[in-house]
Image (cartoon, rainbow, N blue to C red; front, side, top):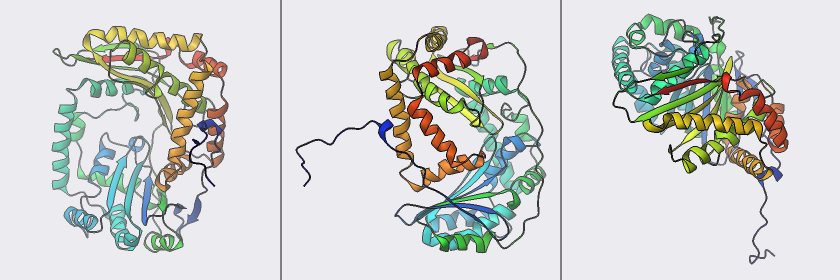
Length: 426
């Protein structure tokens, strides 16, 4: 019998065993790949349609974002109002999330409503028309939003640091300009849509309380028509060569806050240093108890928050430190960031600090493995990056077993001050 007078034993997250639940793979009868996961007890589900329709494939600036924004705004059969009313009627949600490499269309719905919603989603993905009046409204709103954002130091800093890292004409470094939005034509949107949102290029993902019945529902709608193959055009890009790395921008003469961005290029998930760097980055600036936060927020009081993040893309990636601080303490804050870099290189982390970081990382992973949608997101990242389940297992092994000496060697490899671009916008 359970003795409730005794507290349960406390275990560190590093003591747990982690296993990514397997995913089912199925090809629809026309060859479209479907990855699906039966998990959860509630009759809700998520379906993702992932297209190679990000910034990387743009032939004209700003077109991928416009297509994503207007995708649900009308087809030959449905008006934008009819689409929104149908989604509301069934209590469903259809979101379009553009990115640097891909664009993901996600449907959340009760499982029982799937047969009713799939035909409409099919129409959106194969017969969007991008009405001229909707495009005009989009352009007007986008320009207004851009002009407002350009008054914010953090927005301008994000633009500038990406342009410095990758180059202003590189898809990952290119930023939207007013004249580029104004130049968009309906023909541009249709051309990009027909090439990028082609069912011959899609990967489908499904999770929730689902099974063969739902797989057959999808096959009936999306598996019957043989899509015409569309070749996607993309150029070869390389990061810019050495240039001036320190930039100070006065965006608002009366501004009282400065946005700091310090960043360098970093490899993507395929590189063997990526998983170890996840641990090192977390220790340095990746969570609320990090060194950057302890020094620059808690000790110095320069900011409410400072973070370091890894951004892995298909064709590269970056390591960036972000902070907004008072105008009068911008330079002291920058100095402290580099001081923490030097400490990371010169002094190994103690075992207590490293164990805390490991437990934080693995504890978050335990939460991610607790629901069907978050498990699906893990699998989606693995599949879209051409990896396998072994990659997940290897990462867990790294998080559990990496040593302070290995982290110090990694810091000495990547945290050279000369490797970083530095942008401050006031």
